[in-house]
Structure formats: C-alpha cells, structure tokens
Image (cartoon, rainbow, N blue to C red; front, side, top):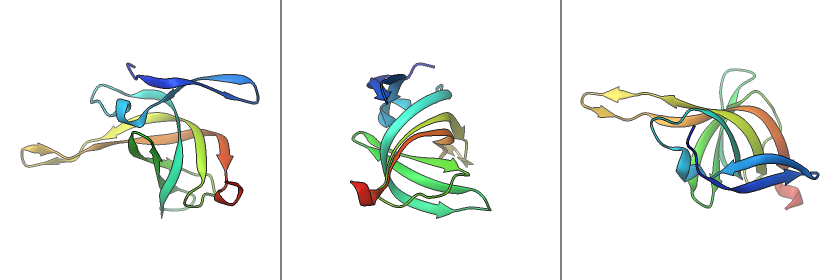
Length: 114
C-alpha cells in the first residue's frame, strides 16, 4: 500500500505506526491496513450491531463501519482499520468511494472530555 502519512502516533508510549492523512488514502489502488485519527462528524445506524460513522481530519473525511458502541458526534478517535473501496458504476461514471472497516479502536476521547 502506498499511503502517505502525517507522522508517527503513540499511545501510552507505544509506537502505533504511521497515522494516515485521509486525503492521501483515496486512490484506486489503495487497500489494506490504515491508522486514522480524527473527529466523528456523523453517525448512521445500520443493522444490529453495526453502525457507520464519518470521520474528519484536517485533510478530509471518510466513512467507517464498526460493531462497537458508544460513539457520539464530536468524539475523537484513533483507529486501526482495513481500507476498502465500494464500486458504484452509473452509466459511464464511477461514483464509488473508500470506506474503512474498523478493526481496533485504539483511542477514544468522548466529546464531554474535550
């Protein structure tokens, strides 16, 4: 995977690898594991136990899906996830987009603690 990164992130003194800038992962050839850090700006319930949430960093936004509970809008997250692409062909256009399957919620700061 050829994602550019913002830099190293640590949690409790443990190096977690590179946190990826959302704007740099939206390339048709990118798929694999990414670390993302940002703020929750939208939440959509799906079939139990799943929900989708939109995350924003300084460079852009991306949707993520998770089976974990407890998110609220404006919470801050550091997640590890699998980057996926959902193709949506419409006539002669490709309207698909990237999303992340959350694998691990490394850090979660509720909005009430910001």
